[in-house]
Length: 125
Image (cartoon, rainbow, N blue to C red; front, side, top):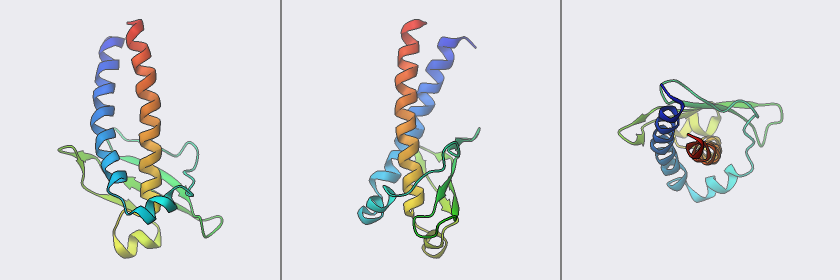
């Protein structure tokens, strides 16, 4: 695969995944979205799996030293079908908690930065 082909394929992947993850953020509960701004995603923990799953670790905002594992499952037909977090709120209610929303927002922001770099690379190839 050439570098130009890689850039094109990666931009297509980012577009599909970025749109799906953005929907999670846009449809999140407004109060939970506001609380998500205070959540810290552990640096270096945000990972994109080979099957399109996104995982990260978030610090608790209320229990110092406690961290939660977040998983945004792969996109299916342009939509995220399932999210999970090890926090009490998600386990109890099974909704997109503030940690899931924080990871989604972080992923979208990282994707925008990557998109910008890939666009710059396109000019080189």
